[in-house]
Length: 145
Image 1 (cartoon, rainbow, N blue to C red):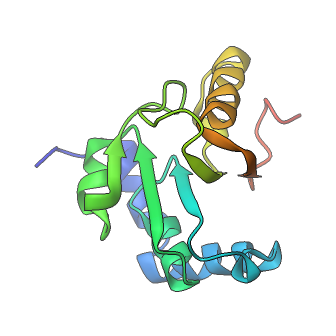
Image 2 (image 1 turned 90 degrees about the vertical axis):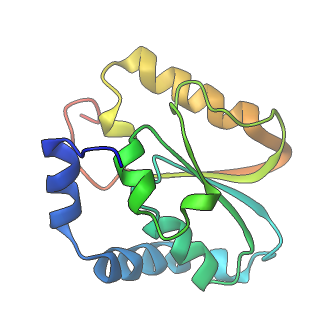
């Protein structure tokens, strides 16, 4: 098992998994995804410990995959078999293979504007031509200003 860093431990103390899932479900419902086709292929980027993926599943989506840079967080995910350790700037996902690419509170972890641009370009690359990008960035960070 991978030893978590101080940041990973702090992240896991911020909210319980149940609180985090409830927050994600509320967000996803607020943008209407519960009315979308549950067969859509969803990629949750910066998936952390996987609670966003669980929220998608709770809303009826059956094909959900997560990517996170942290092996320690992927290991604690209840859906770890559907998670990949990988970098948002170089997604280990086939081109044009996803209907939805979502990042919830992950962009502010990318250190530079160039990194953000790379991550957004990767989201576009993995989407099918009629796919949806969802970006939820709840923290007012310096790069958002």
